[in-house]
Image (cartoon, rainbow, N blue to C red):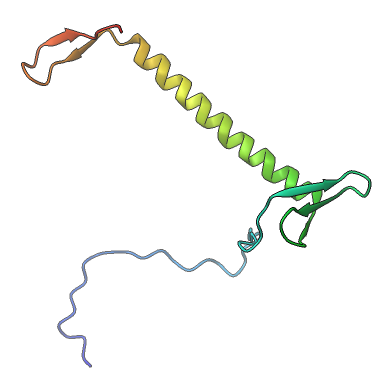
Amino acid sequence: MTTDNVMDIGVRFKSEPDDDQIFEVVRDRECHHQYRIDIESDTVYCAKCPKTFNPMAVLLEFARQEERWRLARESYQDEMTRLRKRKKTKCDHCGRMTSISKR
């Protein structure tokens, strides 16, 4: 098979990851991640399967979730503040500026 009729379209593909990668996060997709905590032994178990978790890993997962929720909430509040400040908008029909109804 020859490549004489192949034309370069200028698309660059992502390069392969470096071999000197320091961290790789691996999450067990087969576990349920519904936690049951044994406070006497400071152990965290999955409530549906026999898997055990490092308590710090669970705490870190909760902290990341909370951070995502906080950022989403802040973004929502900023957008609502921006929308509350709007008094007029351009009419799609006539092109003039018109008041936004306050219902």
